[in-house]
Length: 305
Image 1: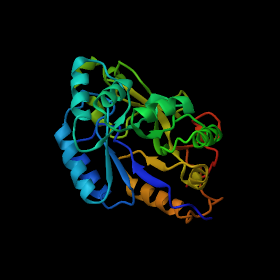
Image 2: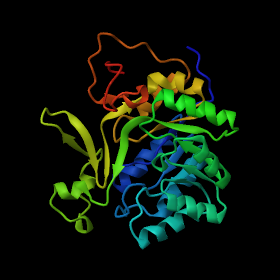
Image 3: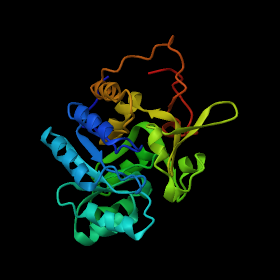
């Protein structure tokens, strides 16, 4: 299989609440991984204060020296004036492009005349909206995580017809971010109020599993964020992505096994992905349903990667 080399790999922001040491170790290793783009920052909960903006900027400078393009992610759910103050500081960082995950970030960046990347939480489904954001300074955009391959192919074709060339990024690996709430479900699980949560989500470096009565992991709770229970894995789809015009495949950090996942996607975009082993056991932690127009939790391959 021949895959165009235009497809880039990106590391999304860490969605979970890790320790400072874990972040430092993770990005020290990531500096040597074959990814072109690294997105940094806290995009989920403003109460996660271990890492300040200066800390992210410091990590960003080190990654930039390693040849990575660095992006800073804004918070997805803005709930207070303090959140807005932090957002203004982020947008005015003066060094790195910002990924806007909320319309307030778009407005701030537009007012400042700064370029930005549009996050998946903006829910961009049509070329008219993309054209408006392109005029506002959008340099790239992320497809909604529930958008199917066929729908995205049609959207990209429409964008090309209208001269919209900003690269599209697809969430290709990791627990899918599905919803955000003003309530903290992890704190509720521990019978603590949100404003006195004692940061219990840090006990779960890959979120808290929410299982059905049949013991199937349906969702993953991550503070105020709800993620998919299974981990999306589209490494077998990178050829189709590149062919339809997707520019970037996003890999969402997990606490274990990310080096291997990055290596597998790097091999896949070079056309070196091995054929699935029919004798391999089914890996119930993998899903790709949304990409194939099915329920998101489906695993259409039915085989371990």
